[in-house]
Image (tube, rainbow, N blue to C red; front, side, top):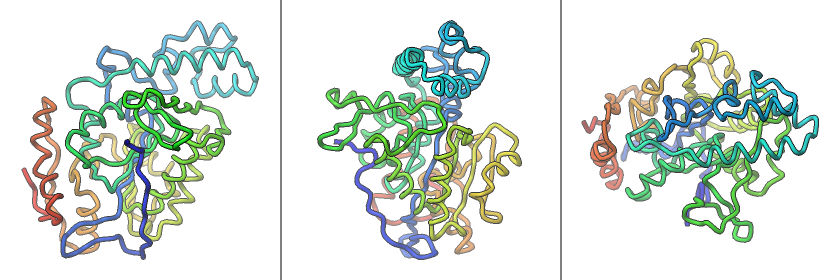
Amino acid sequence: MENFPPEMSLEPKKLLPRLDIKSRINHSPHVVILGAGASRACCPNGDRFGNPLPLMHDFVESLGINDVVAGYGYDPAENFESTYSAIHKSKLAPALEKLNQLIRSYFSRIELPEKPTIYDLLLLSMRPKDYILSFNWDPLLPQAFQRWRKLGKVLPNIIFLHGNVDVGFDQESQRCGFLQDYPSFEPTPLLYPVEQKNYRSNPFIASQWELATAALSDAYFVSVFGYSAPETDVEAKSLFLDAWRKNPTHTLAEFEIIDVRDPEEVKKSWSDFIIKTHGAAFKEMKNSILFRHPRRTCEAFAFATLQQTPWHEDPFQNFQSLSQLEEWIKPMIEEEAGGKFSGDPHH
């Protein structure tokens, strides 16, 4: 049975990260926060069948629900976030039920392309000590996880903060798993863009947020990818900030954001999370430490800042096939099994 994540056991720690100088392994986690922009970057030209991965500003058009939205008296050109919140406040039950049904149906049809994607690279750039906190309903990340789990227990934990169409939950056992593996599980709820989401109202969502804030309060490196913390996620950003401020190492840790907006604007919007110079913003994922030091992010950062001995980069290449990516990543996984890192590039 796969849990997302399995039971977390966080050791109490001091100001410094859990860096073992002898083995050169940093046991503190890297946490990645994913938003809709990450799925758009994963499939910029649509999924395997050309279905677009929507953002809130083009959500209605991407899903082809213009007539439905207009039929309930709302402007299809408006940002869907505002439209859905307005419908929710009006308590128009038939409209909400219809939209929820159409949204779940659309995202359930999404399929990952057969070639390597950003999500494949992201999963393989992290280790079992790390966490991905996803706001996304689409099944792209679960599908990528399923095609790489053949490598063994080498992938990060995934936490679904707003539910996911590909994940189910069993009330009796309090376990979650892929619906493909456990068709008897109930589909997880999808949290829609309303101001008061009430993260504690559902046991699955509540458990996911408990794990997410625990991971963030222990992280040594945080990457935000394609998530702009919109107005309807006020509670989410507040929970994140509270957890981050409780993190004993957050004054030494790093906080980076990957966003297509102007980097200075992006850093300003996340200024509460950035301590002094410990923050960066990039427009492309290739500039992230995840893709420059895959599977060694926390080690590379710790040795550069705490030991003054920077590691040479070992960046991902332009892989043309999944098999090519698999062969490239294997030496790093083999080194991990040995329990000691050289700090040298493998390629």
